[in-house]
Image (cartoon, rainbow, N blue to C red; front, side, top):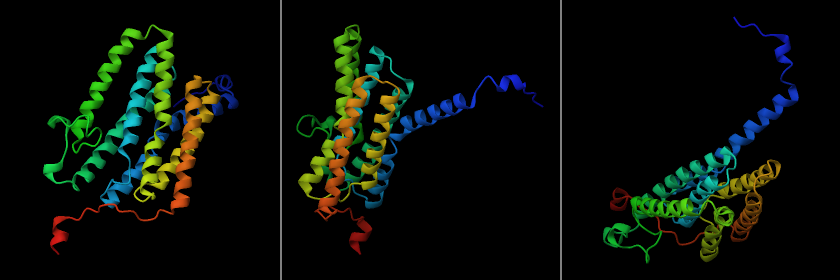
Length: 257
């Protein structure tokens, strides 16, 4: 049995309670909101058994951006919410790489598959056919960037530049998809729901950054993201999701039939 002092209830006003609840909800949205769009793209790839419509450079941009953002945190401590968002986004991108590589590998014969372990580093950069190659390159990048940051983190100019590079890279994450759609003259294979969620999330992030007075790098770059999201949605309208030549995986059993 619990006894509640009436005076204790007065310590927390309704206004403060609602404000704290709003802060918790917005914080939760900030952590998981950025990863939600990729649930739709993951489902699209799984359903089509093909990842050719999704640009793996999106994963590259987000992995690099969030690794740098985490390093930026050590030089300029921003909110833990944004730090947690970066960690979750890296995990999400690894999952996107896994399914994309797994599906795309089925369209390439064993003799044509490329890997870092075979020496295919520069010529076949970010086009490898095994997940371990992507993990290896990201690990090496993280190590080098961490060493440089540890040596230069005491310099304000470096910390500010690091933050700007991290956020600008994230802001440009939609450019590879924009370019891929343009070259194919189609948005087939790309989840429109994913891009729509990008736009909703970026609008929410920009408002959150302004409300919480986050460093200017955050809201400037999120505004750029909104612009790119709108351009991709314009492609959906103009291209009408017309069919392009995307290889389709046919299981061996089905091929025999």
